Image 1 (cartoon, rainbow, N blue to C red):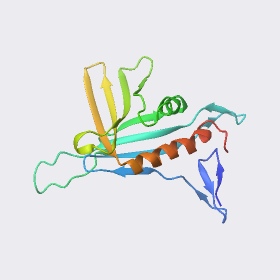
Image 2 (cartoon, rainbow, N blue to C red; image 1 turned 45 degrees about the vertical axis):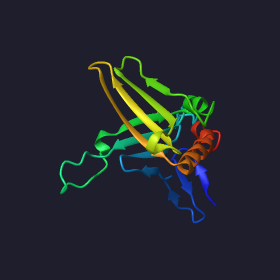
Image 3 (tube, one colour; image 1 turned 90 degrees about the vertical axis):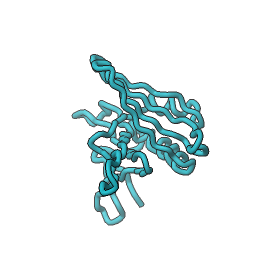
Image 4 (cartoon, rainbow, N blue to C red; image 1 turned 45 degrees about the horizontal axis):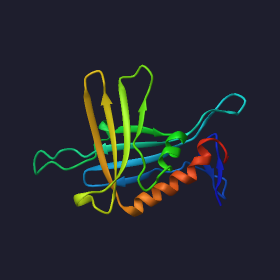
Length: 172
C-alpha cells in the first residue's frame, strides 16, 4: 500500500522506503512526450504557497541527414508546458474536444499553446497533442505534435483527474 507524502513528492511503501513518482512517457516516430506531477510548494507554516502542476515536455525527433545517422529524440529542443488547475478545468470542459490553452507570462516575449485535436488523415482514430511556442521578439514559431492512441489519451485523462487533488494539497 502506498501513502502519499506531499512535501517530498515521494511515496512511502510498506517497507518504509521512499519512492519518487515516475513520468508517463509516450514515444512516437516523430516526437516524444513526458508528463510529470510537480507537487505544490509550501511556506514556512506548511500552507500551500503555490499549486502544483503537470509538467508536459514534448521533444521532436532529429531530421535524419544520412542513412548512417540514427534517429534520436531532441530533448535539448523540447517545449515545456506547466498544466495547472485552471488548465485542467478548461480541458475537462469538453475532454473529447478540449479547447486550446494559452500561456503567456507578463513581460515575456514567449507565448505557448497546447491543443488536443482529433486525428485526421493518417492520424484518424487518434488525438493529436500539439505544443506551440511563439516568440514575439523575433516572430519565431516552433511546434511539435505527438499523436496519442485513444488508449493513451484515456490514460492521460485518468492521470489528469487523479492528480488534481494533489496539485492543490487536498490529498497529502
